[in-house]
Length: 559
Image 1: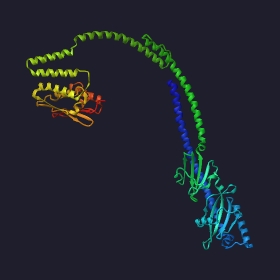
Image 2 (image 1 turned 135 degrees about the horizontal axis):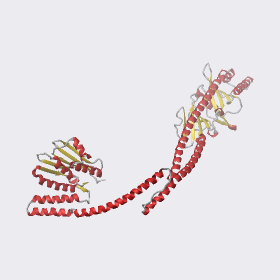
Image 3 (image 1 turned 90 degrees about the vertical axis):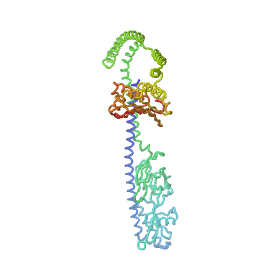
Image 4 (image 1 turned 30 degrees about the vertical axis):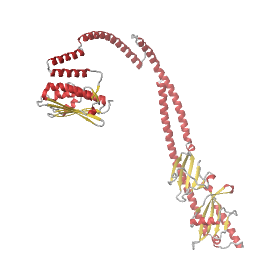
């Protein structure tokens, strides 16, 4: 089952990771290539349009230099005289010829300062003459583009104005009005929508006629901040690429749904899914075949091994093969032979152990017998009025009772304090005036928990080893310090002291062969095991000056 679950899962995970990476990487490369391609095409469209407009701008100088146009602009009244009629006919022919060589212009109109017009057609113009004069004046001789207009029969044109001035006096003579066909922008093979926007995002041209003449807005107002770029509007599911002309300052904005943009990637994705499913099926079949080859001999071995549960220890596995299971069966048979030998040996050992235990019980010293003996010594001391014997036996009995009691390993500092006092009481009687003890533990630390037999072994080490070959009076101080998070108990003596190497060895296992090493190392290790690595003993000592051992314990309970 593990193989059947693991193999397909690994295959699915591997193929999924590779597929996701491949699809993502393909989309990334495709998007980068698309961005470069669209921006290059938009740049070329802008360049071609700018070139065409520049040429149109140059061609309009024809009307500034033409004498008949000059007569029309200079005349104060175009009455229906034969000369004026002929002039209008000539001008209309001039305008018609101009249109024949400029297929991108739908209509051309001349307007003089007396609001008289000449056009290639007799159709009325959409706006008032005052609007055209006012718009042309903004250009001051340069071409001015007005908002796109939709004429009957769905003709979409863009009015362009130019103020005509007298070359000698630079006075305004009139206005040249051109109506460019909006289709001049529709020379792209894009599948998406190409919009041409003015600086205020007014739509000059678009593949969708309902957008022409409206204000185009994007959710991200800073999307068109640069001179060129691409971005994705996730809310609309659209990909945008734009380029701004340096000549007209128009923005050529191309958009296409991301689904259409990544339509080629969907084919790759579908093939990846098919391949993933195919390899998953192959993986399941292979896993099933491999699992069957492994599980069948294992099931055979397990059936024979289950006979051991019925206490049939005579079982031997019979497996014929040339794989690892053969070695497993041979090892199991050897193990069963060894177990049978050990069982027989253990039976003999149990019999011998029973005999030894019976003998040990007969020779065991009962602790109650020892306490009764000490009590008897105590009464003899009282009868003979030897107070030292009474005190020593009483304290020794309490010390033994405290040490032998196995009901608890963690005690309060109060209990440990009292136990240490009894031990030092015996030592005072023993050493008389040659030994001095001073203990000062704050009340707030007396209820803190501490490992049993922590203080007394350290005091004992100080007496036994600190005052060796020491003739002056031995002094031992036990001081307590309470902090916010921990407490410290310092045991100081004025003994012979130790070297740094000796201090280091005491807190390691290098001194376990001596009584000193066992006591100090034992206390240090028990504290660390109970409270953590940050607690335990620290030793500071100077030769011939004394030793100070600090016990660091947490103020809270043990872990």
